[in-house]
Length: 358
Image (cartoon, rainbow, N blue to C red; front, side, top):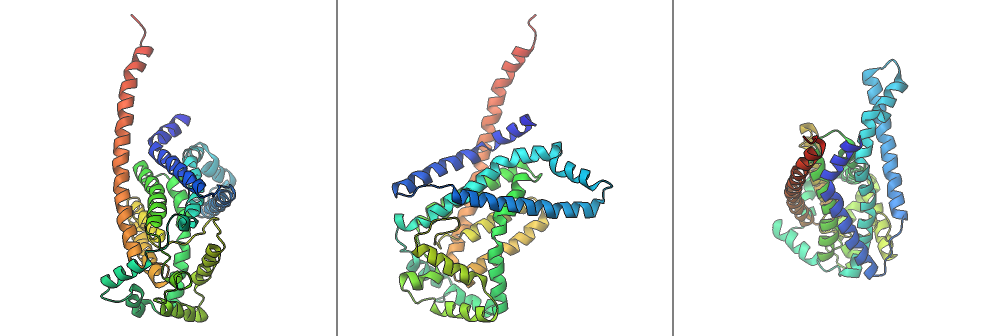
């Protein structure tokens, strides 16, 4: 078991090395602004992953028993979740789980600290870019005839919140499921780079608050009509995102930097992560790929319709994730070559030591 897990971990070294290096950079940058790291957000995130694991096992166990109808249910569940094969999967995937537990708290800290590194100065440019793409109109105005109905708006808001399930159930699947290791490795390396390069670096360089916040934070009335529609829709059918936007604004004004805090529009991490899941899932299952493609498109549309993002936020996210996805393949091609060369050097030495002298 240890040898099998060790081989898997050796193949995943670029993921852990990249994550540790980026964590170190984040810690230094935060310390330079007087922000100390604390364990509370990581513990909160660990609790969420524990809840996700319990929910996942509960649903899977119910489906397994319903399909197989074993004569000894307890023994069957023990083999499925605590037997030798299951123990191998749990052990092998634990480092990736630990990585996911730590990643979001670091990202939240960096997201909340953006104003300490750069001013929110890009919204005007992104408004102009959107209007250039949509022939003088804001993107939400173009979408409004199709999606500007309270039930549709409320449904998009639910899907926008359902995106968080990808971070927990989706990452658990890629960490522990029996899938092609190449897909797993590319997914997690791109996942780490997406949160760091896109959600951290690019978001800081291109600091912007997004349509829902340009009014209260920047005094720009460009999207007052959109926010008026969302509030009117909420009066008919609850639009979940409005209360979250109010909470984020309160946290921002209070300088809160806990799990999930911070304001940033460009690039859109909702779009970036949804696109990444589609890129990876379509290589595992055609059916899952189709569903996640539809989900990705709904998230991109929702990000604009719900006033979180400009259309160009999602466009930049897609381009950057595509680049990182390709880069991850090149990194693992190089790393696997290094491992193969190292094994080739060691093998003759092992044969020499194990063959008796004549």
